[in-house]
Image 1: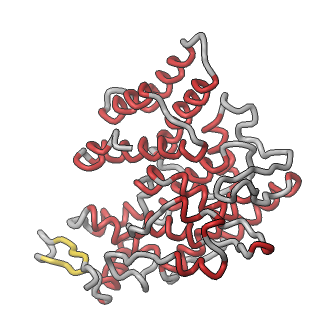
Image 2: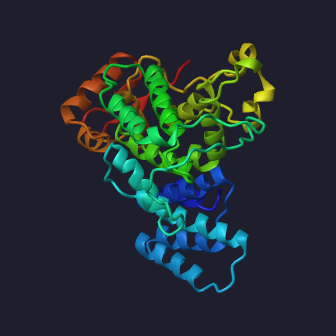
Length: 355
């Protein structure tokens, strides 16, 4: 996943954003053990450089595979990886988003159109999936005849939930439970995890977070295994569903923590219920966030990247009013988390690290 590091670390803001989108899109193919082609990487670079649009990138990839007359099974899967990667990059570059089951289903349709005949369709059959992390066992997924109403119920519950004044730890726990619940419904026969990941990134952005970074790009297989463990119980073996692994992933994603994300540590044979808590210990965040809300964390994340940002720029980034941003920055300053330096005109925000 180092193909776009030069753009991400040193590139202009537009190139950095595109680099993140492509890096995430390609990394997500690992959830289904797929790999993209060198041609896809070259095409992505053209788009990042501004030589072609994302629509032209998609067309180039479509024509590339249309011109192939003989395709082995492995090549067919590479075609899927390439086309879906381009579509993920496109969706992540868009600002539009509606929090609804319709949006969730539409993401699946856009990702897998002409790849799966049931793209954008709720599955009408029951499924089981042998999971590596469960050593061949399966999660119990929603029955086909209850998918739509269960999906709608979960979305209504989440939409009505208030994150206002909720500290970041509780907020992450709640988000994780919502996402793992939607994934467990398994609305689609194939492509369920990639769809859930893209939806998650878009949803978290509504809180003001730029979520298309290394966590999804480099640890998408861990993300999937953590979702599995969040929805698996085997009482005879003393194994209980736990969101701890998924929370470690999301804390890296949102708080920029460095929790170790190793797939082998999640294997059901590696621990039992009494050992689990001792195996999970969240790393210390580099700022004091225990009492922070989601909105405050969004502001802090933005100020890390843009310490000279004005309240108007912060407001535009997190989708809140300037009045709200002023209240947030005052609260953060009172907590001793940020400090204004060099005055109003030429000043900048300094984020205080924990001692």
